[in-house]
Structure formats: C-alpha cells, structure tokens
Length: 131
Length: 154
Image (spheres, one colour):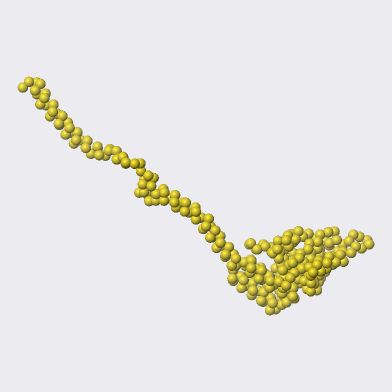
C-alpha cells in the first residue's frame, strides 16, 4: 500500500512539474524535492545544476569494489535537506545504468537507507544542463 | 733318426709352445672384451633406472599424484583467498567506524570524512560495507549527519 502511494506521489509530482504552457512545448524545471516522511526524493539533474542556490543536486551512480557492486542515489534540496540510498540489487543497479544524462530521477529508501525504488525519467520535458 | 721321426717330436712341442704363448699374450684382453652376461629375462625399466635415483614408475606415480592433487590444492588456495576477502580488513573497518563516529559527533559530513571513508571501504568485505552504509545513509536521511556544502556522502 505504501509502495502504491509512493508511485502515485512520484507520478503526480512529475506531472505537476511539467504541466504544459500555452506558448511552447512542455518543459521543466523540476526542482529537487526530498520528503523524509515518505522517504522519497526526486528532481531533474538539469534543473539542479542550473539552479542559482548552489546547493541542489540529484544523481545516481554505480561503483564496483572488488566483488562488491553497489548503486547509490543522492539528492539535496535548495534548503539543504539531503537524502541518500544505496543498493546492491541488480534491477536497481540496471535502472541507474539506464539513466539519461538530462532526465529526471526519483528514488525511495527504507529505514536502513537501502533504495527500494529507483525511477529514471527520460523525455523532452526535462531541463538540459548548462555549463 | 729319420726325418719323419724328428717331425713327430718337434710338432707337439711347437703346438704346446704356441698355446702357452697365446695364453700369455691374450689373457687380459679376453676379459676386457667379454660381452656382458645375458640376463635370464630382459631388465625392466625400473631395474634399468634404479641406479640413477627415482624409477620411471615412481616418477609416473608422483606425476599422477601431483595432477590428482592440483585441483584440490588450487581450490584450497582459492578458498583461503575468498575467506580473506570475506573477512575484510579489520583495521579498515575500525577506521570506517571511526570516521562515521566522528561525523556523527559533530553532525557534519566533510570532504575529509568522505575521503577517509572511501579509503577504508575499498578494503572492506561485502557485509562490512553493508554495515557501514546502513549506518551512514540512515544518519543522513534522519538529518543526524549534514553534508557540507558540495560534499556527497561517497
């Protein structure tokens, strides 16, 4: 039940962020958002990078240490609220590998800080990273 | 004495003298060139090689034993390596906990903390890394550990 709520929450957040305007195709921004209550974070790496606050970020990576391969996602809001999760689950690591450079990321975590859901968004609506 | 009688007297003496001379001159060379006694049955390879140390049969047995034991030995060495990798480095684990404890104490996760943790975790075994991550990330998510500006946890 909690999982469904989370997925619905993430979908609504994505839709709200990219509501079309009258003059152009739908586009971001999608600020980084962290919800400690629902243990979820989401946002667009492009929007985070282009933001003026100097605090926002959202990203994921995978790393291999000898026989240990893990994935990690981290996010921080403009207010400095941060969230992190890690995973060794192959499906979630695969989701990280499939991420677009300019897209959207959402993730949720459990009490141990382990990721239990990683979403990779791709599409025209996401902000492109500027230098 | 007739000539025929004289011949009968000289001839046996000449034969005896020739025989004695032959013995005196050729006795030692006869021993040197004598063929080796023929064995009753052909010698086995083992018997032929015996004076050099290991017999061919022994060498074969040793090679067979080595080949038979090699996989077990290799597996044993691999198991030892795996056990070492699974055990991880206790010093590195202690260091990782130390870094986390220091971060928790001041509530900050600095770039130095991150660097120290990175150095430690590469020497840890899988369960130890899980253990460290299960401490680090909940602390960040609970706000007990605040990341310094621009610093990521890992």
